[in-house]
Length: 120
Ligand code: C5P
Image (cartoon, rainbow, N blue to C red; front, side, top):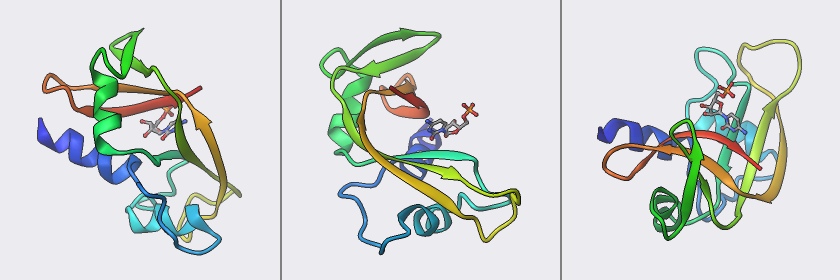
C-alpha cells in the first residue's frame, strides 16, 4: 500500500538535512508529528535520496537481512534522535547523533520502504 511508503517518508526521510537550527531533533520530531500522542523514543532520519533509499529494496542497493528485512549495501548519512528525560509528554526533548550507517528496512510488494528497523 501507498500509505506505508508515505508514512515512511514522513518519519524517516529528510534530504538534504533540513537547516532548522541547532536543535535538529527537537524541531524535526515535532514538525513530522512524532511528538504525538507521546514523544517517540527513537527515530532515525535518513539524509539520502529517495532513489537511493528505494534501491535498498532491490539487488542494486540492498540485500536480504532475514525476517523480511533488507540491509543497505552502502552506508547512508543518518541522524538518530533519542528521547531524553523522564516525561513522554510534549514538549519532547531529544539528543541528536549524526553518523554514517547501514540502514535496515522493510519493503512492501511494490518495492517501496515501509518500515525502518535499525541502523548499523
Ligand atoms: O525497535 P522498536 O520496535 O522499538 O522501534 C520502533 C520504531 O522506532 C521503528 O519502527 C522505527 O520507526 C523507530 N526506530 C528508528 N531508528 C532506530 C530504531 C527504531 O527510527 N534506530
